[in-house]
Image (cartoon, rainbow, N blue to C red; front, side):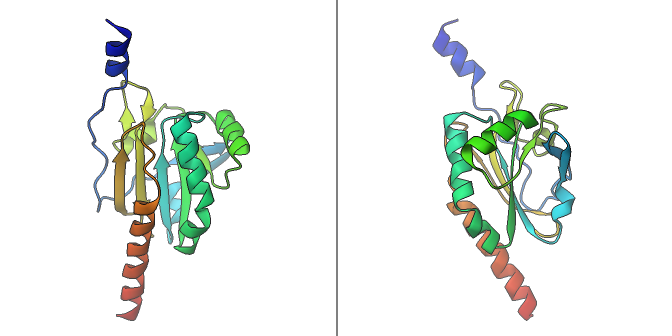
Length: 177
């Protein structure tokens, strides 16, 4: 098998089976540091952005996380917390976050490898990493919006901001009613 064919097979597009909008977001607890855990249900009452990404230190992942770090205040103004999730370990995350000066938690879906990504339907079995997938979870723990981007493409933040603005409008409308 040629190197090109081998590369194509190894990094082939896997089926996009991400959990759909309207489903309850599976709860999880993952390490954010070697001695600290973050649990999704701790965020009940506010929106949460789950940013699954393949790996620390890859060029696209680095750019994506740096972008989200830069616009983190916008996410916060819209009432949302942000967490990054990959199969890397906590020590790798710590070095990556320090190097990139990230101000949001990176969670280690390390052991069992990819268990949380699998529960969201975004684990790439052939590659051993998660898809580049985004989920906006509402204050009640329901998936409001999701997107799976090709692994080599930075999905940006515009759609996340639109989903959060939609949630805020929905919340304001409910408060008026």
